[in-house]
Length: 265
Image (cartoon, rainbow, N blue to C red; front, side, top):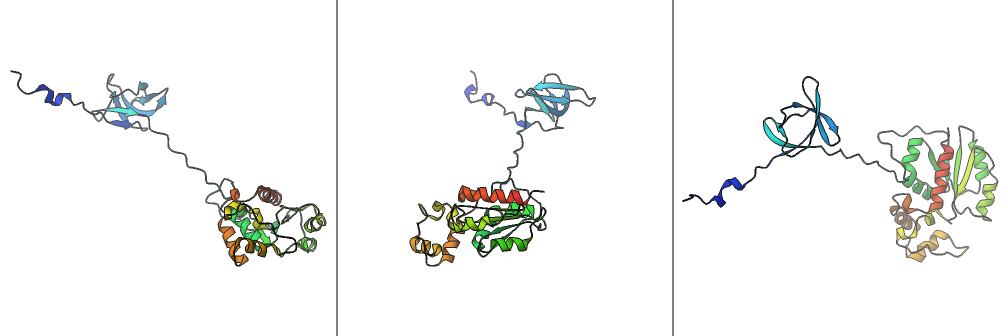
């Protein structure tokens, strides 16, 4: 009597209304009022349309409330573009991209040896290249006062010196006391060697072994941890460092002070 089973009819299927991002300059028509205009912005959750005469009206972003090329659509506010993440250097500074390294300035930072220079480069290299500051390794600091005199520091030729084992009463502290030029800053860290400024857990140790006085420190460390040669141990240490988080705070503080000192205008 009723013919086809009404429960099987297509009338039960709802037509899907597409959602469209309301990009600027998209031309749509408000289905209820017939107002047609281009998207020019948003106010209080409503889209603002401007017609060809320059008249503007606000319309709520209701479902199926607009026509696009004659088809019913639901407008939605576009997602805000993701902000580009700022790149951070190994030292924790904000990286400056697409800026070439400067020509080296007259000011310098001295460190005690090649291992110190390599570690400083690993962490502060980006910052120093931007500032145009060269790091030079010394062969120890026994002749520091004479080396400073030969350098001839000045207001535009400043010198920063990073010293290992700079603690009260040490040989290093007595050497440093002989340098009094106001254009020179000598600072340092309390560790016997720059190796020890690396956090021990980074190289798989709970703490750095204690080496008796009079014993070569690096050789003693190698023997204590079962490494044949100091060069092998150094490669292991340097591989473990990728940023300032891998070294102890006294080294970080000293290097930041030196960089600030030699880059003052």
